[in-house]
Image (cartoon, rainbow, N blue to C red; front, side, top):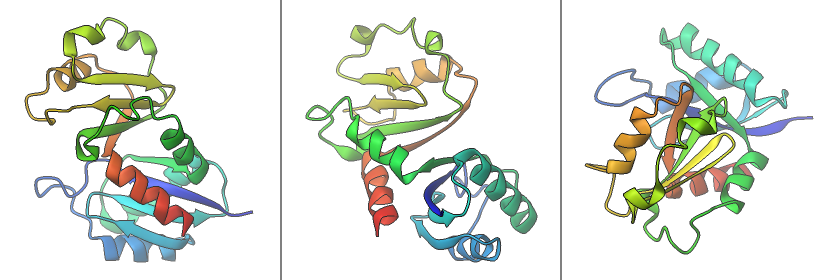
Length: 180
């Protein structure tokens, strides 16, 4: 049985580094046997259907395709459509995070140790907020990312895992693409 997956490529097309065009990426993924390939924006978002139901296996396969076709070692975080549905359904800041472009979902692989963030006192960062739910770190930056004390504190926490972030608009658009 085929499963729909959302691919989140980390650190591509940022500042002129790790450049991968979306049309060549789609072609490479299709040549590797993925079907229903769609991309969104230039920041490394794709939806594919794969015979493997394991997001971890799909991530490894996609990383190998990128290495072979583009000569880049890129980390890929993969979530099934159902996992993204849960991310949206479990939104801890519904009704609070009212500017979707400043509300971020950090997809972690693997799930970070919660103790890495335990020293952060949420009251120190108000009105910014964060919540860790397994392998998903929700972060609300009502004043934007630039100069965010919370973002700096999370970076200093050194989660020790692969993390790639998408804003709430992008998360919902990827879910829509996965359902088409």
